Length: 262
Image (cartoon, rainbow, N blue to C red; front, side, top):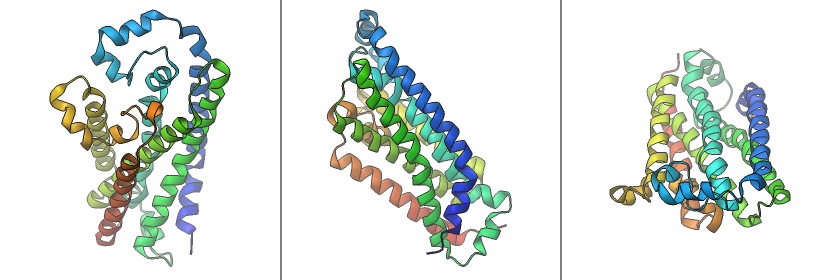
């Protein structure tokens, strides 16, 4: 298969991906290295105990001084998904709508590949761009075992898969919206609004009773907000995340076939 589209997009994004990956690696190493200094700090646990709403917003499902509570509140429930979404949503919005606006999509469409194949290669590029951040974070979290952060390998792999799929899903949604609207700003803005709403629903559902049923409509719930770092990623959650990404990609392919390229 002609992979020119894939190679072009990865080449254009390689520098930014390297910087994001370096940044998340440094941040994660700092977080794991700081844990021994805070693991006996009872004031952090009192924050969780006395203000459950604030604790929920930070992704704290239990005591902050436990290994899972520390990594959830400082990394997996908020910061890593945010960085991943910056990378994947940015690429998803630029991959079709952005390139259409700057006039390069017309050149790509002249390549000897069909429009569905173009979208498939861009979806593969989206996955590849998300992998380094997830894998490097996983490696740095493993290094936390040298700093008393003892979390099972299976749970770390599960939360890594959850964050990776979450990033890919929102990137695919941005690609879909971009193909439907032919507007990069619309793709970024609408996807950001969906992601923010999803995050708030997933984090506040445990402490706001009327939001509790809505958590099943949140991608964050299936990826990181259901205590995956302690209990792993269920088959249902993985299936929902994979199905969402596939549906958004197929929708983007259909919309791109109808897009009037400038």
